[in-house]
Image 1 (cartoon, rainbow over the protein chains, first blue to last red):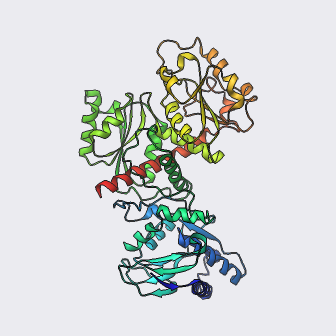
Image 2 (cartoon, chains in turn red, cyan):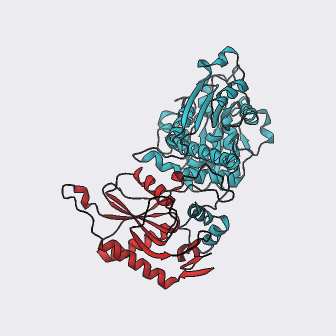
Length: 183
Length: 343
């Protein structure tokens, strides 16, 4: 087991992500009133949910206005539901998004981007909830191994990890400690 | 795939318990649980964990019915057959809609329009349907045990939508789901199930689900409508609604099923409603926050007065809405268990 990010480095990566998101300009479409609907953060259960909340807090401070934050459960949209899972059976949980996503720029947040399959499922799940102006992907850790044509728009750190290894993101809220480890 | 497996791995029971142990309830309400039943035949044999898992899963399906695209893809490419040998509107429609919202294809089968009227047996009908490549059979039958017979003879998943006077598991589940939604927990609640207990599979499924979740159930009705085996069930019995109504947190009024009543179990409908009907007068003696339930369809003015059925304590329509989420969860879970065995 190797620690690739400690608590301080995770904080710095999140600050960096918030800066990137705040700095990036949304493409303007002046004829559409919806271009004013603004930014919203949506985290993919379960680590993405926590990271999304932290990012939303940072962005709210930075932009001096509240940035709405929600949680997406992608279980029903997974592409492996008809495969055996052994003891790791996927569990359906609730999606909690308390705002209208129509016309908003949605920053989708996950802890690790690897195959891209979670991001694909999350995009399909989002589209069933409305029609955002744009969906962008922000991840804490990006590693090679994409199986779908998906990339992150905002990335906290790139990790060089062997295919056989797994990246585990531990966070204070869920695991008692901020730390990214490779196992 | 590893990435997805990674995600799943982080949801293993030990980890969640540890998380909850840190005082962070933000992650998950319940502990992850492996569902392994391909068939839902009744609630009598389910564990508390299994019932809780269905209810927790149903919570994730509630929102599908409230958004603009009322559909999700988990049963895409699957075929669900509604095999109904008895009349039903609510349950059949609810199962059809639940299956459609999960993107399954649905075949409606009713006895009157089928070869059953030409003498085909249950198993032959089912095997023929199975030869068409169906995945889930939802069955209602007048014979207790028909769903079990079916489950032992076909490969598809079987969901009981009511068998004889035995069980109606999804009704029991939606009833406890509704109570849990209103009261958080069933532990310690006093619940009366009132009316024609003898002919009610709802009463039996309710009894199993409610007692397993910690409620105290009382069957209330005239002695002629009590089942013979009532002494062997984990339930209190009362022949007077007036004697028990004040203590109740929940009251579930069963429909008088005229189509099943042979002879005359009570002298007149007027006399029945005088002793066992839920009237405005009687409601004045109940707890102010009592939940009034009814599995439908209602005989207004007989077992329940209109003012009560439509009143502020009534959760009858909420039961119907919840039925959809619970049935989506059940269809999803039996399919999930089937995926484990067939790959």
